[in-house]
Length: 169
Ligand code: SF4
Image 1 (cartoon, rainbow, N blue to C red):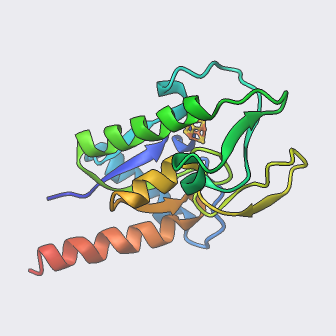
Image 2 (image 1 turned 120 degrees about the vertical axis):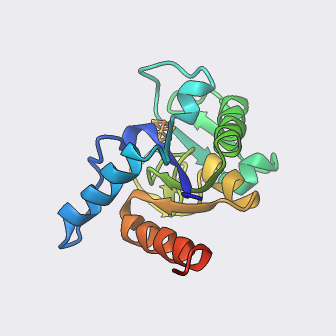
């Protein structure tokens, strides 16, 4: 069976920051996956009803796992607590992934929702720290492999290896 992948909507068009020397090959693979119906394009924040445009939001006092466990919060740049909206966004991302049978996710890094390697540090100074956003954290908690937009190579390798093991001929 072909592996399905949840993809951050804002990564579509594949305008991802990708610095590899074989960019064409990567883009070809992603286009093929799209044609094969493997990609489930989703924006958790839009699904949760957050408006466009919206104020920047950052995780304060922890990272995505802490927010999902109510040990940290997410606030907008004007100080408004939007934790509940972002927790809902995470659950909707998990629901979208599970409903479509996704085993992996390719997410935009840096976001308080989709970040998977880095998030902003909660001080609204443009500085990042290591950590997951809420959706990345929840997806991982439920066994879905999460890759950032900068890890497309690793995702392709992971999918190829997995499918080779399932169909060794
Ligand atoms: S990074 Fe933000 S805008 Fe992009 S898909 Fe995730 S929630 Fe939506």
